Amino acid sequence: MSEHSNPSKVVVLGGGYAGTLAANRLRTRADVDITLVNPRPEFVDRIRLHQFVAGTGDAAVDYATLLGEGVRLAVDSATRIDTVARTVRLTSGRALDYDYVIYAVGSTGVTPPSVAGAAELAFPIAEFESARRLRARLDELPLDAPVTVVGGGLTGIETAAELAEQGRTVTLVCGGTLAPSLSAPGRRSVAKWLSRHGVAVLEAAVVTEVRPDAVVLADGVADGAVRPSALTIWTAGFGVPQLAAESGLRTDALGRLLTDETLTSVDDDRVVAAGDAAAPSGQPLRMSCYAAGPLGAQAADTVLSRIEGTDPAVIDVAFSGSCVSLGRRAAVRQLARKDDSAVNVYVGGRMGARIKEVTCKFAVWKIRREARRPGSFIWPKGGPRPEQPASASHEVTSS
Ligand SMILES: Cc1cc2nc3c(=O)[nH]c(=O)nc-3n(C[C@H](O)[C@H](O)[C@H](O)COP(=O)(O)OP(=O)(O)OC[C@H]3O[C@@H](n4cnc5c(N)ncnc54)[C@H](O)[C@@H]3O)c2cc1C
Image (cartoon, rainbow, N blue to C red; front, side, top):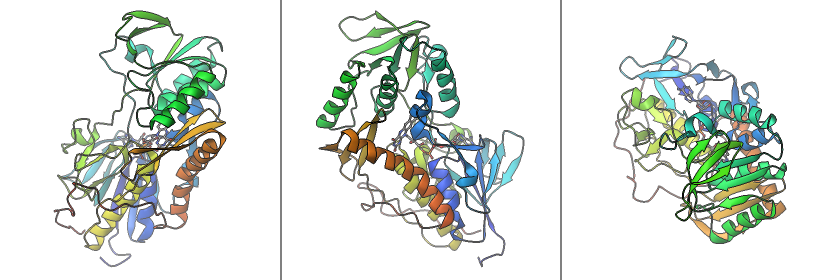
């Protein structure tokens, strides 16, 4: 295709870290017509939602400061991808024609239906709307009212720590292990901080029921123990929008779009996935903003390769670790091998907090930079993933 003739229409579904970066990167070519579909008019900096809830930070960013010139924002939600007609249907009733779709609808929180009262009474934090409700509830709650955070993963820890630093009385129910993804020394550092700040960490306990003013616990010893909880925050669990499955595309068991290593749907090479909603080779990368950026860039590159009639590259992302904030003045920066397995080295305390803040700023900064200089985003690479096909077996289509 020659530049400026018959622009290829690309519809990017989801304006999070992956979709926004992908939309900006597509501008590497001038002849791509780009529409970004997102349900709200502002970008949600999800990695700051615990701060938003505690009133120590903002999570909404104006898309006008993020999107490159010419990227159209449609404030709407996709309800179906019609791969035969090549249109995306939207909640508003509109339909968008496409040559390619980038599927970047991200992830959601989940409150398990098996836990009585959880869906009705617990507050999830993983999405902007639920975080807003949670913040409003916290605003009306006396400072000394007992708060329970369910989930001993990084989101649960960050939420518990942020609230404890505000002087709240917090219990963290881990359901197994505190911070299972960290190394033993990193975990000990987190436990020490939480204990110093008065967080009651119930590592083995699971919540079996949520009541308006309490949680019921099981820990294998005192099952059925009732613990006062004026507010219960649910951070455990991971879900994804079911749009791919509802559109007849194959997904993994959770609903992430099943792709090959070029992020191309195994059912349709005009649909390319990125971020938390992608399951390359059925082995998704860890839910993270860290991976969403490179995956968004690679999804855009795959689409650009198809437009150009060249073979798309396989995904190549090296992890370097994770970072968990402990309020505003401390954090644990866990180092990891490129396959994301933790090593026994971490940076804690104020230095950890500084690293965490720089990482958070970088998550938004890199999207802006990609808007100014499409194609500029680079990331650490470690070679194709082990046990993955070396290249995709898909035919290349050009529009
Ligand atoms: C409190 C908290 C703290 C976190 N901290 C970290 C951290 O420190 N480091 C880290 O790496 N990760 C962190 N994460 C995880 C990280 O936020 C996610 O992994 C990341 O947001 C995934 O990016 P994404 O672009 O795939 O999806 P998202 O950022 O979830 O964006 C997806 C977008 O698609 C939209 N969408 C959904 N359905 C549709 C539809 N049908 N049509 C159109 N649009 C749709 C959504 O509304 C959303 O705007 C944290 C998460 C939370 C909740």
